[in-house]
Amino acid sequence: MRVKRFILTVLCMAAVIVSAGCALKGGQVGNRVGAVATDHWQVKPVRMRVYPSTRFVQYENQLALEARVEFLDELRDPMKAVGRLRFEVYAANRDGEVTDQKRLFAWDVPMMRVEENREYYDAVTRAYLFRLGLESLPPNLERTLLRVTFMPPTGERLEATAVVMVQ
Image 1 (cartoon, helix red, strand yellow):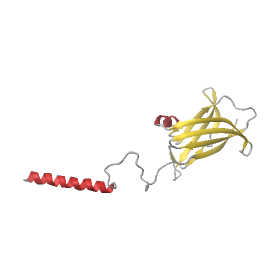
Image 2 (tube, rainbow, N blue to C red; image 1 turned 90 degrees about the vertical axis):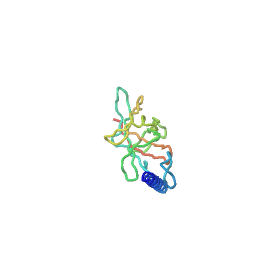
Image 3 (cartoon, rainbow, N blue to C red; image 1 turned 90 degrees about the horizontal axis):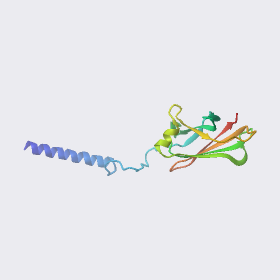
Image 4 (cartoon, rainbow, N blue to C red; image 1 turned 120 degrees about the vertical axis):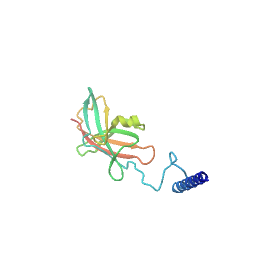
């Protein structure tokens, strides 16, 4: 008789726990993959900046644009991002304004997969480092305007610019 009461008590407690879990989850047990809660804060990049240390360098015997890009959330904290980046370089005047709409260089960099993200992310600076190879710079070029566009899988595009001196 005691065993039957014990089993009945355990079953009743299990039923209460399961029903409480369902009530907490809005009638669902567990989390659905891909479900998005609209009443919660979504951590995502809302701002992007190009580090001032971005520059043209010789890297492994090749000229490259060494660009550091940082993504920030709504609290202005650095974070990782998933999406595609487009880098564009234009000739600029002393005020950092584009002198000619003709683009000098462009690169498309995917960061959709873990491996791609890991390749560029620098945990020390909490920013991404890109070394973008190029053949040569036009003669008499003193400064350029770098425009970086970030295209996430969903949501709004982000854009940042920086003047990069040619040394």
